[in-house]
Length: 204
Image (cartoon, rainbow, N blue to C red):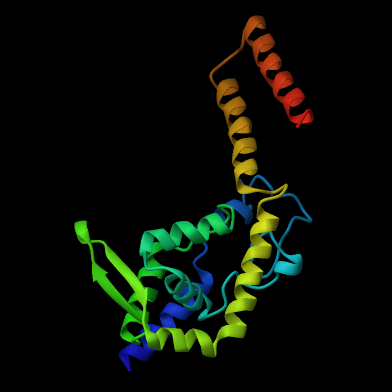
């Protein structure tokens, strides 16, 4: 009974735990892309359209992790980093979801764990895990195709890296203005910096 409830919790949390993704795209009071008509989608924050639906439906993060350890034995933090890189930093699952999912896979007999130096745990797939992947191959392939498509979209104009840089520029100006009146020389210098940045962007 406990194991079944634990599995249900992991699957539900795996569909909702979108820390970085929510932070970058949902907007909110301080969201940089909070304008009306933004990319709002069901569960995808402000990234709807073909990406409507939650980033992971219940049970899908489990399959993502299983596929990753099938490709090569990995540590939990490596999987978190790899998923974040695949989605251009727009989303990374929390450790509070990844590690319970790994524990579940181990209990199900789909993964083995080896303790490494420093107490780190290296996870690898078992034969039973490969059979589970084989039985879910169509779902796994569709899931990774969706992730790749989302990663390509995140890597374009609304890339989190670009949004972060734009937000930093906006924040730097706001903080500098809040420090008090600027001299004519300071105003001229800031204008020069902004003009140079604009010209540099136009030349890309």
